[in-house]
Image 1 (cartoon, rainbow, N blue to C red):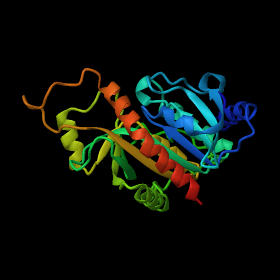
Image 2 (tube, rainbow, N blue to C red; image 1 turned 90 degrees about the horizontal axis):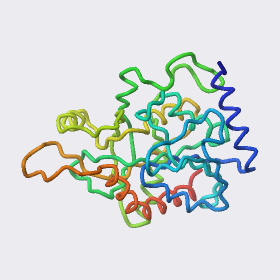
Image 3 (tube, rainbow, N blue to C red; image 1 turned 30 degrees about the vertical axis):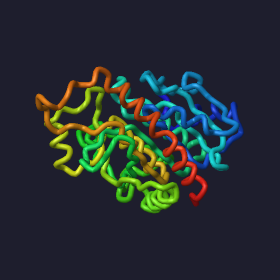
Image 4 (tube, one colour; image 1 turned 30 degrees about the horizontal axis):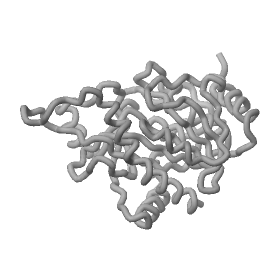
Length: 283
């Protein structure tokens, strides 16, 4: 079996044959945010099925390709469609694209997601800067760094203090203020999915300090930090989770994921402007 380092190199080489762009920043686009890729200038698209060792993205709203080009004058690699644990992949597979982006040259990762808001002050359409995470899957044994460690990719033990770079969070705050809105701040929790949370689970998550919850991101950030990348995490609040199930709570959504995608469409203009501004000023 090939080593992880060899797999990353083969994937990197396949992409490098398609474009000379050496990205400084990697971007992961969450559910409903695929259109953010339209802002990338002179983009070269590389479908996942043309990249060795890349699993396909199977979820609606996830195109399944890398896009390399320039955004706000900065060379970027955009992951247009992420890989989820609930699709049946291992954690190593779901985070392999982060390895590839790092191998291509990206030293900063901007990761976005659609998240359920647990903070009662949040509203649909808010954007939350992630200041920390609770990786419930990792705590339960599904850590993407499980198994033999390749020192060429990162250290055996990764310090996750300030995993979400405080300077990047401050920069995002300044950019948002200049655009006329305020970012929310909070702790994000990754669950496995694909089922949404029960009211009891929501009460538990809120009780341990979670402000937003989703089915991605934390594992990707662990791998990014393993590779020495700086990270900015942005959650767009696609729905506000209900902590109680009562007769007057209204009917359950017929298609919750469709609602997530629709909220993503509403969030795109502000999120595009925010990311552009961060890229313009990032050091």
